[in-house]
Length: 288
Image (cartoon, rainbow, N blue to C red; front, side, top):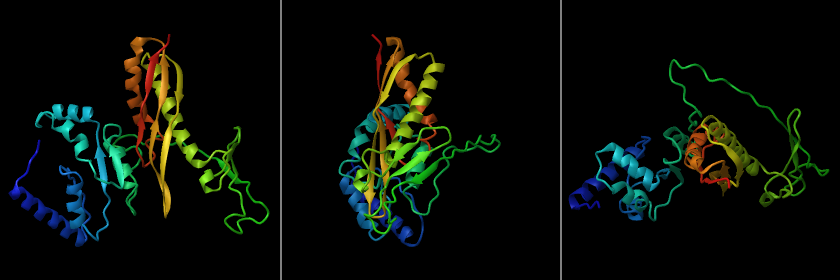
C-alpha cells in the first residue's frame, strides 16, 4: 500500500507543471507515470497538459509476470506489483495499450511509434553492429479490380469493391471490402486476410518449434479475433488475439506445448511487422 502526504503532493504538482512547461516550450517528452490514484491521477495530468498534443499509452502486464519480475529484481516490496497491476489502470483511458507480458520491448515500442504522426516505426528486427545483414525475401502478388459496373468510379455507389488477388501458380483469392463498407460478404476482405496471415505465421512457427523440441502435435485449429477501430481519418487495428486449440500425442507434452507459443510469437514474421499487439490464448489437450 502506497500513501502520500501533502509535501509529496506539492512536489508532484510542481513537477507536473514543470513537465508541461517544457512541452509547451517545444520539448518532446516521454513521461513514465504510475497512476496510483487511477482516473484522478490521470485527470491531474490532463489539466496540466491541456492544449498539448498528448498520446496516452497504457502499459499493462499480467499480475503473475509482474510479480515474477518484482521478485527477480530484489529491490521491491513483495506484493506491490500484483496489487498495482490492475489498480493503476482503473478508470484510466488510453489512446493505445501495450502488454509487456506478451510483447517484448522492441515490439511495444513499434506499437507506440505506429500511433505517433511523423515517426518512423522501428524495424521488425534490430541488427547489432558487426552482425551479418539479414537475408531478404521478396514477395509479389497481382491485385486486379473487377468491380467496374460500366461507369467506373463515377460516384460512391456506382462501382463494386470486388477484386482478385493472384500470384503465379496459385489459386486466385476472390476479394472485396468488408460488408460494412459496401463489400461482398461472400468474398475475402483485407481485414480477414491480415488476421489470417498472423494466424498462419504463428501456426507454422509453432509446428516447427514443436517438431524440433519433441512435441508431437496431432491437431491444430485457430479461431483468431481481430479488432479494428474506425476513425474519421480511416482506421487501424487495435489488437489481434489468437485462440489456437491444439492436441498433442501425450499428457507429458502439454506443458512444453503451451510454453512454445511464446517462442512462436517472438519468431513470427507477421506479428513482428504489425503495429498493434498480438496475443495468444492457447488451449492444449492430450490425445485420448
